[in-house]
Length: 239
Image (cartoon, rainbow, N blue to C red; front, side, top):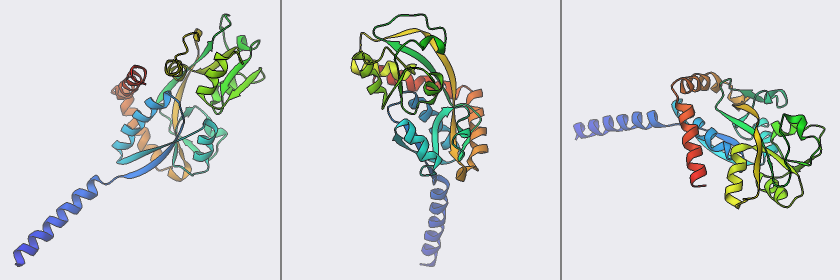
């Protein structure tokens, strides 16, 4: 009987050790709802956090609200934003290794002109999506209409309420496919390419060096690029 108890005790200790070794902490990450580019960022961060034994929970918000939630510490981190967001949102710490990139592009249904930079957009009614900061900054001082979502921006373009829309290329292409907007086209080449970085709330500052180490390794061994490509292949083939 004693030997049985000892055996059970040993088994319990072994089980407890195994469970604890697989136990993970969790982080809640805000993301811009409807952003196709987020799919790649999510894939990369799930892998990076897994490597430091964290699970990832994603919570979608509008573009502006996502930043407000992460800066206020109501979630643990912001999925991905352009460089330097921390200057305007002081509670967010930038992990200095890029996890993704976006390509800003111009989309139109009715006008044609050479896209030679941001200033070439000035004569037109421009649609941008609320909370997408690269578009807001690039079109500052121009005739801008702010849409609540990518879907709304494309709908305004289709109805002729704006002349052009400035959006991340992948998000726009996905929206065109989902809504079957065959008359809308990308105008010219890429307007601007921007690296995207992960931001954590300052309460989670201890995560930054751990994530930096893993993300650097993932870039060097090609994992980041492969995860990004796989995510977009799945998205655009089966949205």
